[in-house]
Amino acid sequence: MIRSYILNKYLAKEFLKVIINMTFIFFCLGFVLNLFEEINFFKDYEVGIKIPIVLSMLVVPSLLTEMFPFLILLSGMWFFHFKLKKTDEIIALKVSGMSNFSVIIIPSILSIIIGIFFITAISPITSVLVQKYETVKGGYEKDKDYLAAITVNGIWIKEKNMEKNNLIRASNLNGEYLIDLTIYELDKQNNFIRTIHAKSANISSSKWILNSITISDKEGNFIKEKGESNFFYKSIYDLEKIKSLYSNLNTISFWNLKSEIKVLQDRGYSTRGIRSKFHRSLAFPFFLLSMLLLSGVFTLGIRFKENNWSYVFIAIISSIIIHYFNDFSAALGKTNKLPIELSVWMPLVIIFIFSSVGLIHANQK
Image: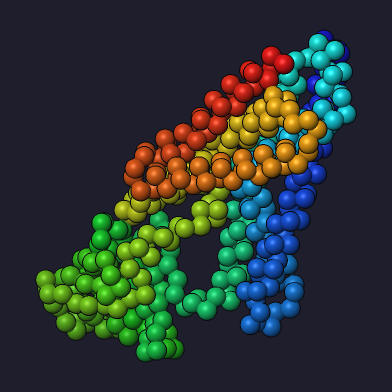
């Protein structure tokens, strides 16, 4: 029992070392690549190098989380091949009574624990960092005069043009219609001009059709009441743009996903994207586990006559295939071809089954 504890502790410590080193490498690589992107974005602004560096530091942790399953795959292959097979430690472990399955058990448990830690503890931090990133960078966006958000108080849109500023609020979205719409018109100095209220507005195009409108001046006096007549409003937003307001789901912490889903449901907004994010978060620890098992299959179950480049090639090809398989399944979910739950969990189950079968085969060697 003591000997088994010592061996398991050794495997856990060495595997964690590999993960930490690989994480540092991925972080540095992501930082450098993103830094070039930020420098290119700010090439027309006199901001120096400080802001691009700060922005890269803010966004890279979120990118690292998205890459972590593939980091686990590479870490597992490095650990099993270079740490155990190349140094013949795997032979010593087998002599002591451990099978290939026993060797993989401890890294598998650690992968699940790391996955749970990332979702419950790291996710809230990265979501705050991404929010800060978008706030800072948004201040330099050329189209910053156009803002939109979905909150518990409704759908809010801010627009500016050559003549005036408009602040728009609607209670919810129902199909192609914004319901209970109010447009607050202001001049260029943000002085209130008038209010336009409509029971609904068809936003299928950027030329909105407002129904049952009432117009009042800054004193609250009715200027015109058009009843069921139509009134046109030219906007920068249409239905597709309104539906893409939550395109960056990385700004939402795992702990806030449920409440955000309820807000979107109350506003009549599609929740498929955010529900997909929720299920991906739940599946994340198991995704890491399946990638770890897959690395064990490739290294302990397959031999390439000490050709290290074969393992590198397999790691790259596997990462690409899994990435596009996940994207394809997610696309089926977003287009209603598959239920959201199935589109998220199906790739994971397939990878897990393939890894388990390969692991059983490797354990017999």
